[in-house]
Length: 375
Image 1: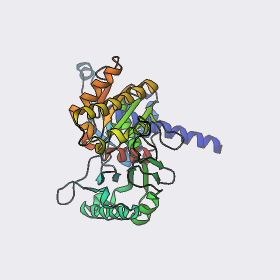
Image 2: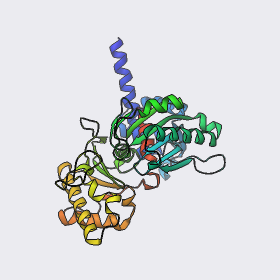
Image 3: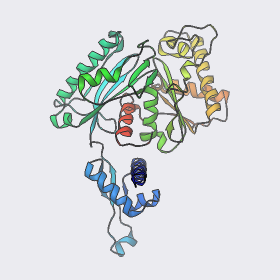
Image 4: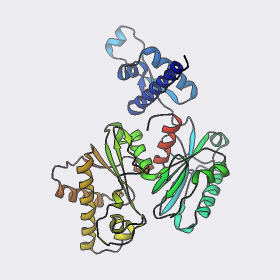
């Protein structure tokens, strides 16, 4: 009997996850639409959505439009359901090699308003705090400041701290094992922040987190395999297969920035030499003449095309500070097409989440974890 109960609980969780996925991708939608699309019984859909409404995770979002036929038969308009972005809040800590962003956000990655009417966001330079403890102490102080700046009602709804950091991350222990360009040694990020702030802390690789955001909020709602590339102070990447971020043996894979493109090249933050990142990072290309820049971009495009050949993603998603330049995007895409003319103009896309790029990855990790939606 106990085994059956465990199985039934598992089925309920899977059905709940299925419903939340569908509402997130297609909402606002009616219970009838959910049942039809998910092949769940109307009774199961009603039971699960009622519980989600009571928890505040879902909200009623108006009524469906009545067709002439429905109106003639006096049919009732269907209540539409959607995710409630304000059901709870999360404190985002996005640690990058250039800067740190701390923000209090809703469940769609939008920063809250402070009591003074400003956005609850603070950014500062990472390089000002080279020691891990110093940087984390500054983050703790900023978190406390932001908690005091939002309303008490909002502060009471902050449920977790979600941290993203470059490099290799041990998610189970919340340890940044090797934060490329920031820390060389392992740093127990979760333990330090939880001890100071008394909230659960999630820690994930920054590009994997952004890929999770693409799955839940972006291109992944339409395409189930992606290559996500982030270009700025470094070059990061992640692979999405069947709607899930693929992880290698050390919790990270598809390290595009650490492809070796030059034998005996410059030392890289990862410990190797001649990595792509040493050639095309923002620091590496700063000040290059046009010929040298085009050679660097050519190496980048070749690496992208080779990766696309290996994994054959439905779409490649470009993100990061350097890809905000339309000129840069056009140049990279044009060079990719020189290597592979079969790449269509809609195969490589700029992220639609650029307005929330610093926060949305950490928010996606939080939402998917706390709602128990399969990653």
